[in-house]
Length: 85
View 1 (tube, rainbow, N blue to C red):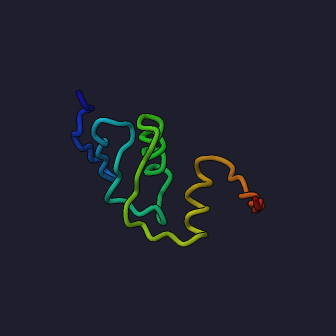
View 2 (cartoon, one colour):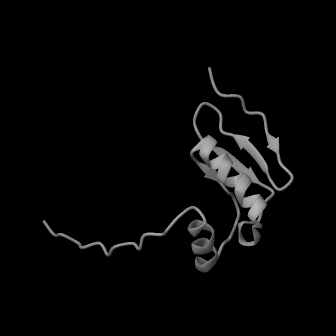
């Protein structure tokens, strides 16, 4: 038996839980222009669903960093070292 898939519409976005799994689809929001109240709602949704999918955002690298840093400190990606066999 799967999870309910009823959509929830907040004042700032629409949240639709994914069927038979964890996570939710978030639409009707622009991540590049979030106010604190909207981010607080998204953060709560993240705590409840563990995975949020934001389709068609088209964020620049800088906008992605700003959005991601609202969840906590970012860790720089380490350079991968290629090992030959």
